[in-house]
Image (cartoon, rainbow, N blue to C red; front, side, top):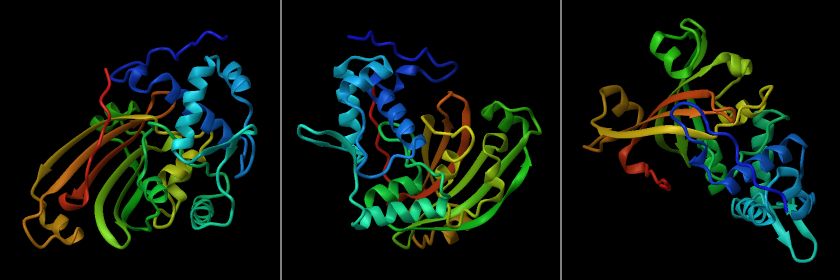
Length: 273
């Protein structure tokens, strides 16, 4: 039986134990499946082979496969093994195809498990339609504070975007995104009125996968502009969520401030030691 070797501790604010070992293995396996161009119905290697490949026990690998099954990425067939899900004939597969076409042919599905989930990924998993109105976007120099947060040089090029997001035609959130352009130059040329930000990041070379994030939420009254954008006509507060997401190399990837209508947002988290 192979000896389990968890990844080395992450530097800075983040700890490698944010994800359990099986969750990290599940995310790595999903990345490798996406990189290999896996399609619905493809069979994945056996549990024994995968355990040896990733240097973990079969118990851990079994938990990782179960995690992917829970996320709808894999399905198990008795006596036959594990397969990528989807039969190509239902609405969910049609939505996955539409998302791939909008995001580019190289876009991979969102990594499963306890990784950071994007707005479009959430909507896709829950069968909700999305619409985005881009308020502004462009490239500019990072301020000193942004450079410190994102670990880039002051003045380094940042991609910045403000957009209004809808679920099933109901306005939910105003987002302000800032990302180091060097990690994904394609950001500057992408139309995010139709494309997914996280799907675009996955097409970078190397692919950028948001893995963990520092996240804080506070409530306040909306400004006049926020009232107008979020269609607030009463005393509904807004919830301001600030997120600094880190990629698979524990490098800052995305600094986002999201302003949600308080009656259309709920935050849930799992707390571990």
